[in-house]
Amino acid sequence: MKPTSDNQDTRKFLKVLILSTLGACLLLVSVNYSIDRYYVFHPQEEPFLEFLEPNMRALKTNVLKTHCAQFDAVIFGSSRAAAIRTGDVNRAFGVTAYNFGVATGNLPDVLARLEWLNAMSCMPQTVILPLSIDRLHFTGRPNDLLRKEHPAIVGDPAYRREFLLSYLGVDAFFSNLGKLTDQLMGRPEPRFRYAPRSGDVDYLWDRKLELRICPEATSRTDAVTIGHYVDYLERIGSLVRGSGSQLVLVWNPIPVMDQLAHLDDARALFGQFGGAEQMIYRLPPEDARLHDSSQYHDLGHYKPGLAAAVFTERAHHVPLRQLLNELQTLQNQCDAQNDSD
Image (cartoon, rainbow, N blue to C red; front, side, top):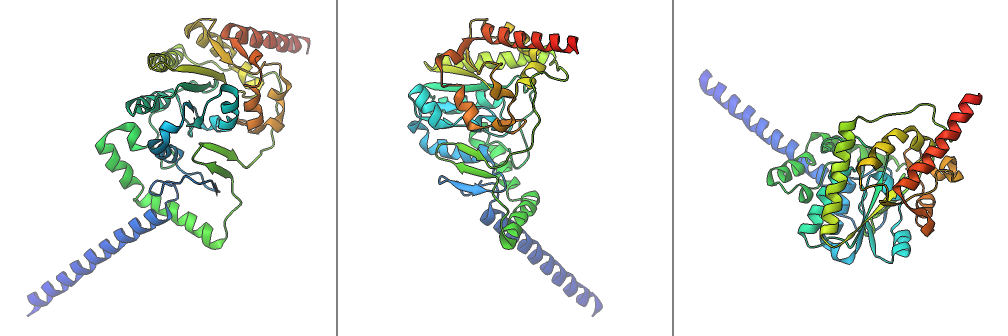
């Protein structure tokens, strides 16, 4: 009799174990899919406010999958590019623009997105590419839930499965539970305002900053990294111009002290890319707004008004040679000031 009893107990245990596992999996999938803190399963096109940042790569790619034919200009770049308002670009260039800037977006990301748009016969007539002299380093494809690349951009069926499973997994579950807790206990004040149909993002915070003109220290990027950066710029330019479109370069209006800190990098970059007569939109380095803390949310993100100023005057469209000379002149003034001190 005892062996039979043991078999029954084992079967009961296995049944409970299987049902418990299925129940846990169902709970995991249900919570992740319904709350969808990263906006992966429920594409959003209407404006919304958020305290937590969604996966903008997924959100914006889903919009362009459906509406790319409505836009003849696309703004690329990192989260800094969010400050470049599509309305300002539309007025400056007479286009209908979409802001495809994403968190930590770099040149490999831009090239992959352009290739994807080109494959859909949606290559924009105007490609707006902001450059940041303090962000020349590359990283691999982001694998965290906040910045995971959309499967349409990657184009690999195995990656598509891995992408979906990651947002149904344990890490996503705890992240979604955190959002649910916030909802039940009262939402925190929103930190972002999103307009998915245009790609515009408002940062609803300001941090206390102390900006100056002259940098306290300089920074130098190795020649190999700069070479890779130039290679991607040339590949992007070749693809854009080969499609009959124009590439518009923009010098991100980061604080002037950070521009001067990377003057050697600018000199090396400009010396390799497109020649000294390559044109770029920039604010003159001596512009007082470039060391005015009220123009920035934080050290890495400038405000829309400052971004718009880059396009307001044709005089802001200059050769790389002129920008480099302006930076060098300002650096000479800083050197003279340091010598006198």
